[in-house]
Image (cartoon, rainbow, N blue to C red; front, top):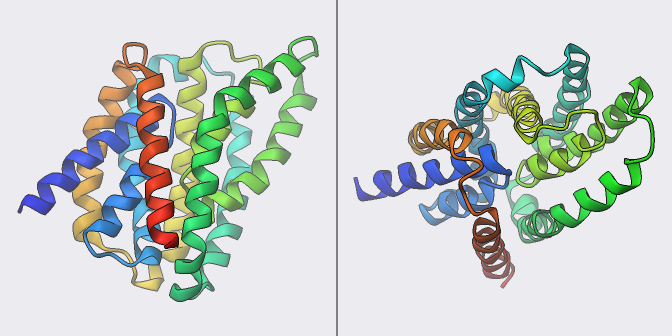
Length: 250
């Protein structure tokens, strides 16, 4: 019972972080490992955790989502294609091989999370004086394809890189970008779940408990996005991620 309560609370944190900036599963993934779930099963189970929380987040941003130009929805196509490729690769990865890859994957995700503000700043400055037209949208779509392959294989870290790339677009409002990022995350997790469903590695009990917390956190995070100190959240996530990567490596 205590374990379920803790997972629910962790789910709230996961949903809230994903709604604000991404990186929630950098906390959720170690929590699943802590309850004894194998790394491969925890990774696949994360898809059923992400979807409800992101749906709640998008609902929280619904007013801003209605203001997003419809052509941006085409970006969901490379997300779906990349997720299918990544999930198919994961489907043919053995549990022992994935276990060996996990420390490196987590470390890579933590580095992405740590340097996302720097990445966003430099990319946005580089594009500031250039026209943001349909060609830019096509280039972003091409960039999202390999990112989505990573997202279909190991989803942690996808969201905040997408935030950086969406800075290329004409979307100026952070809430609009977060809403679109939420749709991209839902697309990737749903496609991955469809492909990996038959592996029978999904832990429905623990996953749905954390997903329920994710719904609360996702909606609450969307409402409180401008009131949370993202700097403190970022420091906590980086510390947890590095500790997890080091623990799994050694």
